[in-house]
Each structure stands twice: as C-alpha cells, then as structure tokens.
Image 1 (cartoon, rainbow, N blue to C red):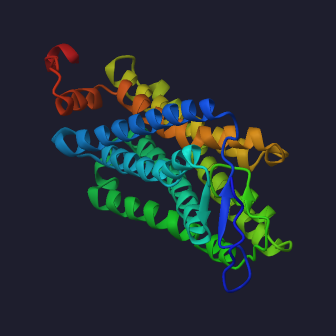
Image 2: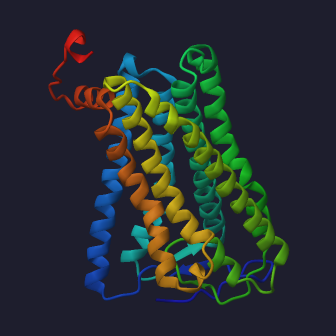
Length: 322
C-alpha cells in the first residue's frame, strides 16, 4: 500500500487512501465475493420491482410509483460507494482522488437524505389511504404523486449541497489515510489541516434535522395509522392494510435504526470497527432486504414479479378472494 505525496495547487493532498478492511489476502478475496454477490442481488431485486411496476397496469398507482422510485433510489444509493469499495478490496493502492472523494460524499449522503424523504412520502400515502380512504383518490392524484417524487429527488440533492460546498473548502495537508471503505463525514473532517467548527456544526445540524424531522413525521403518521388499521373489520382488507404498513415500517426501522446508531449515538464514531460495520449495514443490507420485504408481503407485487420473471401466476377468482 502506498501513501500519495502528490499535491494540488493549494498544497493539500490530491488523493486519499481508503483502508477499507485490512486483513489477510484470502479474507479480502472472500469479502469481495460476498459483497459482489450482495450488490448484484440488490441490483436485481430493485430492478425487478421497477420492471414489475412499469409492466403492470394494476400497479400504476401512487403507492407503487413511489415504491418504484424508491427502488431506483436504492440502486443509485448502493452504487455510490459499493463499486469503489469492491475495487479497493482487491487493489493494492486503495486510492481515491480528492475530487472523487468529495463527489462520493455528496452523492452518498444526497441519496441517504432522499431515502428519508421517500420513506416520509410513502408514509403520507399510507396515512391518506387508511385514515382518509374516501378522500384518497381526490388528494393523492398522479399530479401530487409526481410532485412528491420531484420533491424527494430534488430535496435530497439540495439538502446536502451546503455541507458539500463547505467540505470542498476544507484544507487537507496530510496524512491522507481514511480508516474506512468510503469517504464518510467523520473520517474526512478528522484529516483536515485545522479544526473546522463551522463545517462540523453545519454538517451535524443538516444531518440531524433530516434524520429527526423525517423520522418523527413517519412515527407520527403510523401513530395515527395503527388505530385506523385496528378499526378495520377483520378480513382481507384489514390484512392487506396491515401487511403493507408492516412492510413499510420494517424498512423504516432498518434504515433509521442503523443511521441513528451511526450519526446520533454518542461514541459510535470512536470505534472504527463498529463504524464500518454499521455503515456497511445501512449502505448494503437495507437496499438488499427492501425488495424482499416489499415483494414477499404484497400479493399484487408478487403477481407482477411472476409475470416479469415468466413464472405462472395463479389468479384467484374475485368472488373467492373477497
């Protein structure tokens, strides 16, 4: 492994070294195979959901349109750091350029913020469908759904714009070794030439606001949704509502649970091993499990996926299904 001594015009380092997972070569190859398999399955699972929603006219509803965008977001999210991580595991240099590091930081955290917004939009959709069923068709129109999609995507990129600009103004004199597998906020700030309290405070404030506002909104939505679900007469309608909400809330728990452990729990950043494990979980495990959670608990999605994959689907007569 080499440490870059090249400098740019401002005198700061021109590339960083991502240590990743320092261990024996055999273990690194094994990790590379495992992570590559998870990455490919994640791409396949989320792409299948997008194709299922696209191909099935029955799924052209706001709930599934949001889900398809969420799946595309997961593809972008996992692709913002995993390919570079896989390349560095088998590489001897393990380097990333200064510009590449800042871009990775910006895109990864923009996708992370957009995920919080999409989860909030999906909880809003479920709130309307269950708590305001008579008004749902007039409120949650395709026009409003399109606006929510644009807001989630644009909001994610705009929310992290200021932290990214401030990070681009931080000077890095060396060393340039990051004990992580991607350009995370904490390890990057630790390498700055001098303390940058303004940048640190801004990044902490923005991330905390995004995490807590979206999480509290989702929590509040489901505080209202759960009693409404329990009031629904026992039967297929109640089971479908409960299954849909349970799937969404499980995804919310996986994402926010790991993110809060990483960025809210005190002392979590002082242990590099724990930091890598938790970060690995929310950047790889959650996008991997999301397609399974949404497809396995949703009959309409399972039927659409069977058609996409070419498997025969048993249609249940409507009079029996009811």
